[in-house]
Image 1: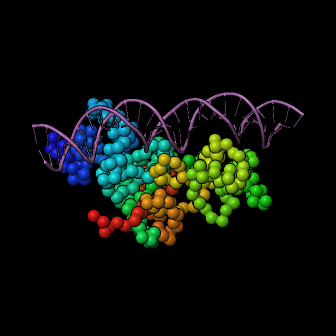
Image 2: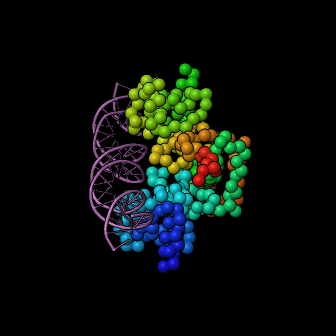
Image 3: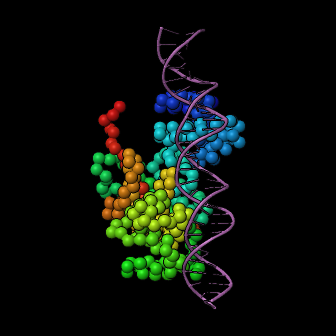
Length: 142
Length: 142
DNA sequence: TTGTAATTTATAATAATTCTAAACTTTATG
DNA sequence: CATAAAGTTTAGAATTATTATAAATTACAA
């Protein structure tokens, strides 16, 4: 349970009270070997089915937004009926498979972050994201 | 009204019947000096208020999706409660101003399209889009 | 002209998300 | 330790974009 103390520290250091619910959500999101993508529904389902905890859907929404604001999560810029989040907050890019609607991470070795030669006056660049849409190659169809 | 015949030809050539409604939507979208971004609501409002035509909202949805499928429109990959479309179907990128929620086009001279060094096996790359998020620079705040 | 397939339409259904206000928790302070 | 204020959780209602439905209308090939 040393992870738990880390989460308590992390939350406190950003002005969020370490409640039972938030710690459970930290466990679901950050006590993992790999980063991953999720929707609010995925997360709520994981908490109730795997971690056997009852957390109100409103709290899951609130917490994910709080974590996003604090920079613990990134919202993925993909147009969809639902919002997707990423526990990988480092600079990276995505492939989107239009056949399966699957989103695949890819690092700087595969797609180099493009240089921005001119910025909007008076603004700071917060992120540069590349989205590559792919689909089955149907070149031999009518 | 030579534009109108062009639209009729364009629609027919892609297997879409040139109905009154579709031609009006073509006028709203393509009879312009510049490309632009819009939501379904923007478009429906423009048609009823500027072009003084009553087209059912369902038809606007249907038509925009048909036009997207035929490649006459692009859907912008931005996470939002509504979908944004772009009449600029050429390869280009976007700045997103997080202060104002404004989306600004930018061409290849400002952001060079990144090279994709490795692709997903058996898939074809359909598009490569860069999104640069910017906001007011608050570096001198606590 | 006429039958069929495509299209439009109003309206209902769906689903993600946000709002609300009351109950409960956390925490700082006396 | 008691307590009050501020923060948090919660169920359920409200909102809103979008999709589905099915009947009426329109386009067009034969």
